[in-house]
Length: 303
Image 1 (cartoon, rainbow, N blue to C red):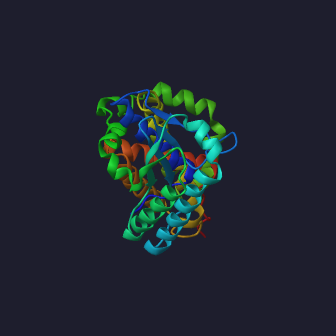
Image 2 (cartoon, rainbow, N blue to C red):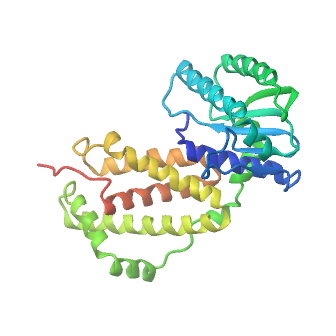
């Protein structure tokens, strides 16, 4: 399954890959191009040896032909900026002459994109811009072309990401200070449980998983900010789809909670293999507990 990225997430991810790559060569050979002040002129970064980088992730889901069309149009528009803003580009690049333009996309399924890139390469050369090498070429890449860097981003020793120990005292302290959140979750669980004892048991288990998950995220933020940001982003994306994928009234039972946690856990394991199954499950159940307490996840009362 193709991961759905938004533009900002993909750009940040690509920049991390590039920084990893250039750090192994020359840490002062990559220049990022901020876009907050008058735009980025059609590139996200460039290297001092003449390679420009532009990142683009089309919004999924898309069929192959639709994805190609969006990528083709994006490439065309951004390449046009090289000519439209040639004076600004020349001033920014200084003595750097671009010989390659890497179009970094989240998926590459059509050879037609390569054909389009070849055509546009020739057009750019014909513009005879002072910062374009006569051998200028556009190269289409994905993160598969940065496999070593991608692995490096996620290469965290397992002991560093296992959830820290949680004591009864830790849990009691949190419960004492967050009765409102617990009550919100309790009220929802009442809709799918008939036994007060069962509700209390589920709520205690969810609270423990929530705290373990939060502790794990704190550890991840310290040892791998990249993985931390990615997991937070994945959780937010899943939260946005809860009302569509699991609307109230559709299989409102404890099984619904398990289904949501299982699906999210499997998604985290796929995207972040270094988590391990148990840690991914903890983070998934922590997310479920969070959604119950903050209201994105709800049920209809069983009649």
